[in-house]
Length: 243
Image (cartoon, rainbow, N blue to C red):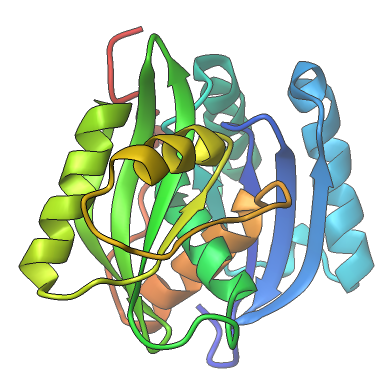
């Protein structure tokens, strides 16, 4: 990685909104999205080219490529993983950094709400997993840092609400809960009816740009010296349940 702030390209194809982002350090330089699940495979490479051109940089100048590897759409996940492997095949740089889609959503939500929500609050990214389930996790946001309190998993609506209540008991306080992702409306509606605590329940309105969140997460890991980069051939999908 360069001694200066690293350039990171990130993309997400695991959700309904295809997104591509480029950052330098913590600064998002480009943020593009296409809200059409049927064209992820067709739009991804052109969108990557557009993002890089908008920043005036070449692929070879990148320090890392971050890709969301799930959970989410099985087909979408495979498109992202295969594209990352293709772009990085035979290269020693840039580094390949996988990022959980739910964590990318949480980082994007925190970035978007910087200065709006203060103090400690929970972020609950949720994706519609169908079959009456959500892909979800729970993170504590405080002073720009995210701490995982509930690992990503496929869970029923009711179980998610129960887990949020348990977390509040463990934290010994009521905190705002921000729901984000395409399953946020489902999770919020269920929590509003059954949450035993009088917590402030919020929901992001615009479609999340998971790629921006993936950029921020990848930078945080690289800046902290975490061994987050892997060989591209070892990049695997995170389905959370059998295909």
